[in-house]
Structures are given as structure tokens and as C-alpha cells.
Length: 199
Figure (cartoon, helix red, strand yellow):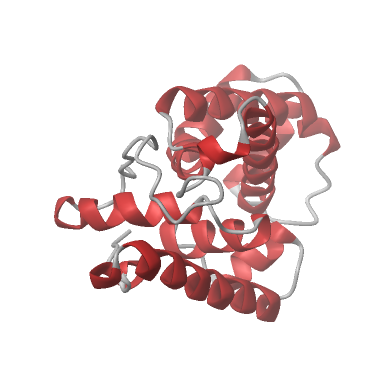
């Protein structure tokens, strides 16, 4: 049995030591995924805490039909989606857009964001990319973040999203096409930003 499986079994019995071990192993991955969605450190920290509270409360229900890592990423993605939906409902949709409503004018109110995993020389491209990611449909955004930003394989993402690997591949291709269109619309010289950003 994998160490992670043993941790989950111990967490199900109430072991805080096992929870700490799992946290040490996965907190950075959870945080990085969360900040890719929220682009805000405080929000990402809130999601991180929520994910591990959920793990602690749900460990006894885990059936071991999937890898523990898959389960953790699935919880994280669901928490991120729920969080961003709730947050977007508190603001006018135009404030969250890369461009102003009914206009081709770029919305400069969006805060610049640099993912902690992006190399220094690529940060300017990353700022543009993460602004554009906000415009993607939900499933495309998830597939793109997990494969292109977090570096998971298409098969891993398929298991997390509970879809086929081919479906993940299609979502990523459509996400890249949509990102390219958005970036070229406002930054013609930066249309290939999606290919320049490093993990």
C-alpha cells in the first residue's frame, strides 16, 4: 500500500500527524493550483485551508478507487471553481473581464499577476496569459491550468476531471486557440505568449 493511502487511513481515524504529513506533501501543489484560479494569495490560502479541512472530514469516505493525488486535485479544482463562481457573483461581470463591457478597450483595472512557478524572464508574458485565462470557459480553463501550468499529464487530468484523455486534449487545444485569439486581439506582437510561458 502506498504511503499516501496509509496517511488517508490514519486521517480517517483522526490522526493529525498523518494530516500534517499529507499537507507537507501536497500543500504547495494545492496552493499553486488555487492561485492559478484566483490570482490572489489570500484567496489561494483560504482554498488551501478549505481543501485540507475537507480531506480531514472526508477521509473516512475515500474508497481508494483513484489515486490519492487525483482525489486531492479533484477536491482542489472543485473548491477553486466554487470559490471563483461565488466571488464573480459579488462583482459585475465587466470588472472581471480582460476588456471593458461592449468595448474592445483593454480593462487596465485587472491586477497584474505572476504565478509563483513562472521564471523571471517570462513574467511579463505570464501576466498577459493569466489575464486571458480568465476568459476561458470553465472546463477549458481547468484543463489548461492543470496541464500547461501545473504540468500534469493529460491522463492525470482526465482522471481528475473524470473525462477521457482525448477530451482533455481537445479542451487544451481549444483553450490554446482561444487564448491566442484573445492575446492577439490586444497584443498582436504577443500572440504566442502561451508558448513562451514556462512552468
